[in-house]
Amino acid sequence: MKTLDYIVVGCGLAGISFCNILKQNKKTVVVVDNAKKESSSMVAGGLYNPLVLKRFTKAWNAEQQLSVALPVYAQLEQDLNITLDYKTPVYRLFASVEEQNNWFEASDNPNLSAYLSPKIIKEVHPHIQNNFGFGKVINTGRIDTALLVKAYKKHLSNSNTLLQEEFDYNSLQIQETCVTYKNYNAKQIIFAEGFGLKQNPFFNYLPLDGTKGELLTLHIPDLDISCVLKSSVFLIPLGNHYYRLGATYDWKDKTTQPTLASKDALLQKLNRFLTCKFTVVNHFASIRPTVNDRRPLVGAHPKYHNVYALNGLGTRGVMIGPYVAQKLYDAIEYKTPLDNTIAISRYNKLLFP
Image (cartoon, rainbow, N blue to C red):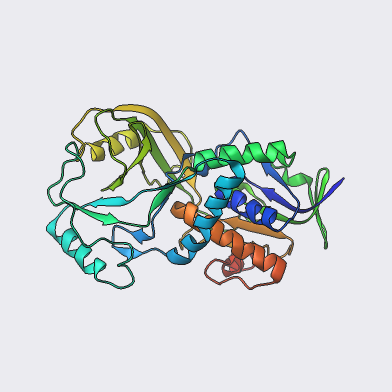
């Protein structure tokens, strides 16, 4: 029997963020991750953007999240010897004069001026059609989430701290001072399974609804841009004339099978502004771990004080993951109370009506 500080279930953005904190604090851990199931982190667009561009408002706790997240990714780049953070502006394609006016109004707002350039950009590329220009969002970028997950799993495997298997809940024994899973004994266990939490007998009462998202990888030889384009879809440069196009939002379909309907919908929106030829290279689908109130699910099980959830990162996982991981670690190690907006205790009535 091997004695550890933590067992972490799941190696997506949430699990990696928490494991990174454990490493910084010299805590011992084993990670259990099902290699046969692809997490939403593997197919995410990976954008970090502090604004909601549909309404020109700031996202929830965006500044605090970025102040935590960006140094974490910089540290992971050094530790894993890879490049993760690609600084790139987002260009919002305006559909009307009204959107232009809303942009000017937002850029005059002191709370938003650090992120919005007040100057209208008339053209980005000859093959990008527009009638009303673009607004530039600054202090934005893309995290290569697929590379992060792949590299971090390799790091864990090299240190013999990765169990690549489906977690067997029946093999988990919970005691007052520890938890035991097969040959591992730990003080705490963290479930960071993404949408897999729906199958977790300890936390399946939580309202993790899940939203299916589909993305395409495109090769566009005649397009050469370094910015992210945002209209009704995102077009994200990946380098060497490859781009990621996304994303769809389906609240009913809970499968990870790509659909022709979503592919056609994405390409139809792309063709509204792209005037050159392209090739579809790949088509991805995953289930985002979204919550009804659009806030993460963090904290201890109401009955088992050493069993925790770290989930519900939603569509802004690259920003939220490191932020809530730190909040959970502080709650466990330093007894710092979790904010009610993220604590799973806000849903205790679902378990104890």
